[in-house]
Image 1: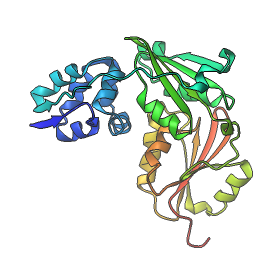
Image 2: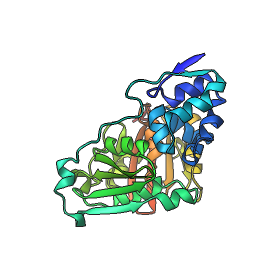
Image 3: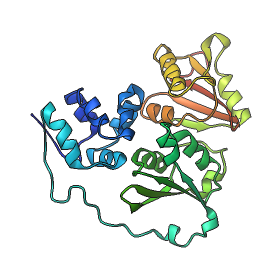
Length: 279
């Protein structure tokens, strides 16, 4: 038997019994993403049972019911499934309504589409100090964690059992893309990007174009190339946009990612572990 509770990570449950993947996916359509190996890797490690239940619009009892036949015992705590109503933060209470952009992603989800790309496009178009409101049928925990890494302030409120509003305040410093991002990701100007590329000779750079691939094809192709890449080599990628999920995946690795955005549909990436020894 494997004992879990609402704080257990979905990834730990899957490691204990892979049959939990179809079991959890059967609970609700949003949870069917777990069947996709790439999306499962991104979602499962970051989301708890309680968060997954809210994403799927189901209960902890639902999780206990589908996991019990697989050998899982669920321990319910006194406050399981209950959260105190949070008060709106000052930045949301006093901001003019015209500074809030609203985006209802429920039609995209109903059509079976992942709204992340559209959400990130909406967010990227915001002026610093403005707010994006996401209307959804569940609390978008992975999105919240993702934008919090970009220093966005977030707040979620339940309008009903099937409607949640999440507000994201974009920091003022996001107005400029000419500053280096935190960690191993660097947003470059055309000149600085060319300078970084000049550290590598022609035979030290591999080029791939993933602009015509459907999701999650671009990420799969890039990761496939990176697995074969040696130190002192670089991968030059032609992409439609900044690949947010890829940056998350490589965030804790030794890769350096340099980004140049030519336009809304033309982004270049240079990815490498170490500079060549001849630099």
